[in-house]
Length: 435
Ligand SMILES: NC(=O)c1ccc[n+]([C@@H]2O[C@H](COP(=O)([O-])OP(=O)(O)OC[C@H]3O[C@@H](n4cnc5c(N)ncnc54)[C@H](OP(=O)(O)O)[C@@H]3O)[C@@H](O)[C@H]2O)c1
Image 1 (cartoon, rainbow, N blue to C red):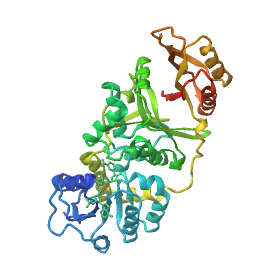
Image 2: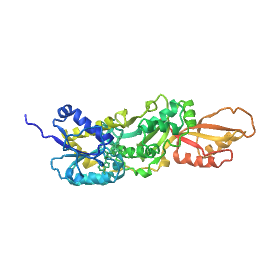
Image 3: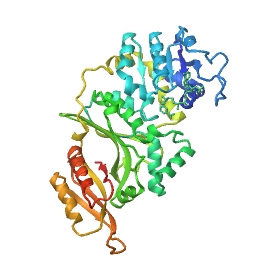
Image 4: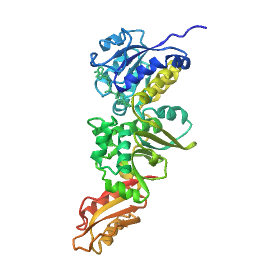
């Protein structure tokens, strides 16, 4: 039987993910060759600082001294970009495509912000771009949407796409920690970066949502325009009240498609405690995808980390070795501007809402608040207001209201009006309530 030539691979980056990829390619070489029908050979590795000590020993000659050494090596078939960032990494990917290499990347920031540019260059050179590791780490959600659910019109996606946030929320809920303490715990365990801003403010989840929206709904979301709230302002008090009402809070990236268009957001959302997404704990990710034929599906697993993310990168390499034509067909179709489903403004989003008002404890306050909500056609589903310990003249209380379904536009107008009332002592706190 003829022996197939190896798939020769160059890695750009030998950090968390790159090291995992190199380890799997080495440790599972025989299994991968069996599955791919070809040897997946790590030919070159490029790092920024070659002198740094590493968790892996590379074979002699594998460490490249610069990018050109990889680009000019005609034997290299595929370049794996796991360097991160959107400038050097983008230029390196483009240079690899121009040099005739296929590309595998874990870089959701590039896909979300420069996807159209990148794929048009790949099409020009008829090269593949594969990106399974870019969303939800080890969960094979890209392949599931592209292939497994190809027979469906995707109606909605709800994702816990940031493990750092989910870990912090789990600690705040289970161990009654405040946000700064839970964040420090996440940093101590390596679940959060020293600068966690892009994770905790929802930007990372918005990038991943933009990638999923594109794949599932042909929607080109402007990442900057995705309505976005993170967990960095979430108060333990709201986790406590949500729990009392039977809900857990999770940072969700959500997108819905209906005949009018696409609505999306990233936000902390109250979910009934017995629903599957509410039960996702710690640094795990989960994605609920609803298709018109299949109905509900749920994908769960490690959303980041060395081996889980490397598992997704290696799956792209096997795919490249087995079915390059399939990947090329996908590259030729993705991030074309047409067809693009219309994206509706965030005010069109419809949800039930949780609303907490810090108010003066005196007669008539409930009537004032409900009057404002009624004038904006917001209907109240339930109210909690605990007894205050004293009847002091200036006592204050938290009033928690759950609403029926309302549009975000109408609800936010009502919030603005409530914040003007003299009986409301602090800005109203509000979160959507999920299905
Ligand atoms: N970490 C995860 O769990 C995870 C999960 C999903 C997706 N991702 C994505 O995967 C990518 C890599 O993440 P990571 O966590 O592995 O990053 P990392 O640990 O910071 O590693 C980055 C690697 O890239 C190298 N590098 C950076 N700039 C370079 C340059 N100009 N020239 C050559 N090499 C350069 C670094 O070299 P030195 O080692 O010499 O500094 C390092 O080895 C990012 O796009 C990230 O968003 C990561």
